[in-house]
Image (cartoon, rainbow, N blue to C red):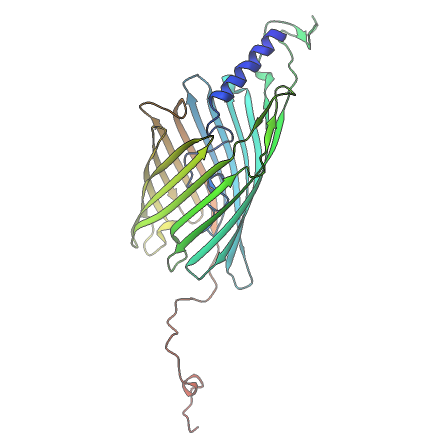
Length: 353
């Protein structure tokens, strides 16, 4: 049993070491649909109530795959004047990886961002995140032909050995800043942000009591540009850059969004298709259908050529969400009231009356 368990531990450690770059915590390549995993400020500009579920399945050359599950929700915050000033978000994450998916990472993340509007169209955003992650080996998926329990033979037991879990845990804090510029309807035209992850230098202790692994500090930036826009369609570009453990990866591309309802906001009513490319020699094809009350997304990662960052194979992501838009009851800030009326005109009477 000791030999088998030592072999399993070494295998898992080698697996973690081989995927250290960009594999410390769960992530999705469809970063535009998972803003809470992108950066603490990435939800800014979206004032919809939303709950969404995401699933990602990815393989690697070593026959060690990844299955990632994400459930997230966001609640926009408004003041008495019906002005959006911030957003609260929460995400529940689970990832299974390694041979037979016996290595699991589970976590919960809380996000808060504050929108300090410079003007109606210019915004500065600050965001913070706190996340708790737990890791362990799921030994229930490991079986042998022996009847040993903690080193002792028990013929009453069914074949297979019992391996106690040695879970690890870590708390991670992230912080970020962003700027975005909107159109007259409040939809972002330009959105640029940057963030630093694990500012508290959290680390895991797992598998063996003397074994620990620090969660790396990562610097990331993201950007969104609406290049072409009219009442019928939009053409946008998204970029995401991450630097971790002296390795950087830039992912970027374009999305075409065709409006599905006449005289409606294209951002909230569209059928979209996108094409992205990563320095990890990966192309991403994305499709999404966004409506005022729900959202569906599908993307596929196609790996080709040499892969200097990660030895990954193709991956598929699926997203399904419910959303609700808040009715805008505030006054129209773009009403042309710069032509001041004379006092007697406001009172609707002549000067001599």
